[in-house]
Image 1 (tube, rainbow, N blue to C red):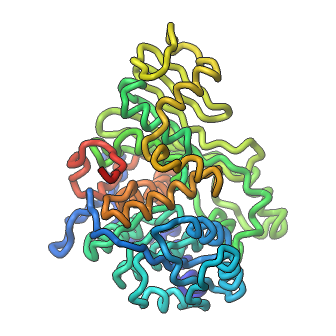
Image 2: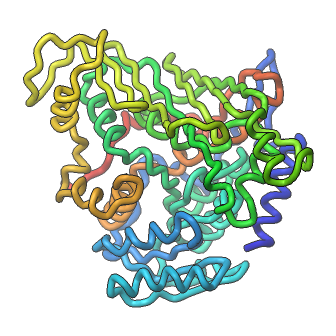
Image 3: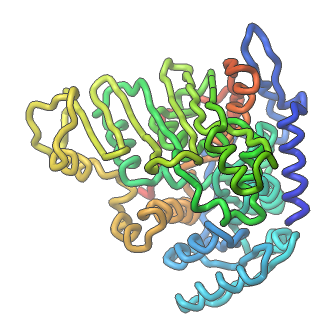
Length: 466
């Protein structure tokens, strides 16, 4: 696995130096960066709305048991329609720690693999349906592609890919092998975001015209937890929004991206690396490295239907955690950070008696809570899922809802909540923002990973058993 990581890093460094393949590269035309959208090969089919045959019991192999992996193993112990079949990590002691989680729950121990190519042995098994990846970013796509090539569905931690070429590799492999490729964007399952999504679909915000999302999280206490310093090394050599999906994911769902609308044009800019360079100097010695990434990156995106998206990234300056998450519509407004707020005007509320709605000011916490309860997303109402999620936990429960929905859809043979095009579109910002910044914040015409089928589906729908 170390060799694979080194190869991936080398490829990323080549990209940062300006090398790119023509098939998935770009040209500059009329002062815009225009990315290629290669035609779909004859042996591939669209994965829009794809559902596999129902899987009675989803057999899962976990690869990566460092930071996020053990929490996922713990959560899966509570899922009735899933079996933990295999565990894999570079280090055997991490595998043993995960086995002890199974012991604590009275679950039989899983097959175990370790070493640089342990994941290959895991993927070769014929008793695994789903490979669940929680490895460093640079390994996401190579291992996911390998797993799909060996007949496995894959779930990948965020971001799913770190370059446009990797995004296309996920799309092409998923389309060719007919295997699900879901990115584990847990923030789409936060209770506030889910409820707002339901309210949007019920029309309470009118026409949504602008949304905002971010990942603003000071990582000063966490840098040393990343094995081999991989996350800091990535930021040392890359500009741009290197971790965009927590911010972009939920708001893309709000706007029905590739389900009736698409992201067309992107512009990104960043600040200087003031705190970033200070952090690098304190970690490695003054002047040892020139820290590339700006302290704050801001990206503005315009959709085909004239909506706008603002995404921000900041992991170095001291500040309260924020994903921003703001929704502005023709009839209302929602804001999650720094405190949850709703401002609605002219909405026809169900099961809530509130008079004189005024979108010019936030409603009281009591009124907000009453509306949030009335418009709780249907998936969290089913079988007491909301209560179970809060009990099991994982970022307040949203991780458990994400895992539950993944297994629910595979078990029942339903389309997943997030498809491979979500994984590619949201992850594509990693490269697109860097390229825009490298060219003086030049606009980028974004690639269409659906290859022209972005309006084939009519809105986002979380599939449920009727």
